[in-house]
Length: 144
View 1 (cartoon, rainbow, N blue to C red):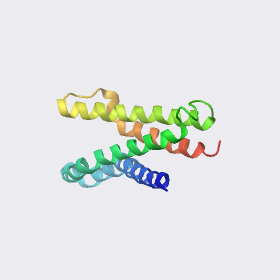
View 2: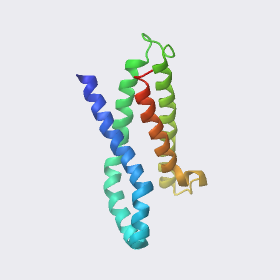
View 3: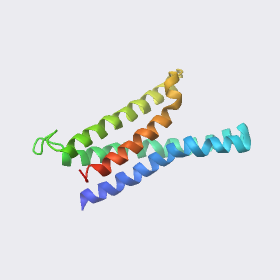
C-alpha cells in the first residue's frame, strides 16, 4: 500500500511538473500574442509569485518519490543491469538528471544574475521532450 501511495504522489507531481512546462511553451505565448506584453507580464508575475512557492516543492517530491521507487527495481539484491526494465529505468534516471541539472543551472543564473547560455533559452522545450520520453519509458518498463 505504501508503494502505491508513493506512485500516486509521484504521478500527481509529474502531471503538475509537465503541465507547467506545457503551459509555458504553448499557452503563455498565446496569451502574450493575443493580449500584449503588458498583460502577459502581469499574468507571468502572478503565476511566478505563486509558482515559486509550489514548484520547488513539487520538484523535490517528484525526485524523492522517484528515488524511493527506484530502489525497488535497482539495488544490491535485484541487481543493476539484469533486466530490460532496469536498463530502461537507468535511462530514465539519466534523462531526469539532465532536467535536474538544467533546473539547477537556471536557478543559479537567476540568483547570480548571470545570463544563461543561449542553448538554455529553449530549456522548457527540451525538458518537455525529455519528460515525454521519460513517461513513455515508464510505460515501456512494464511491457518489456
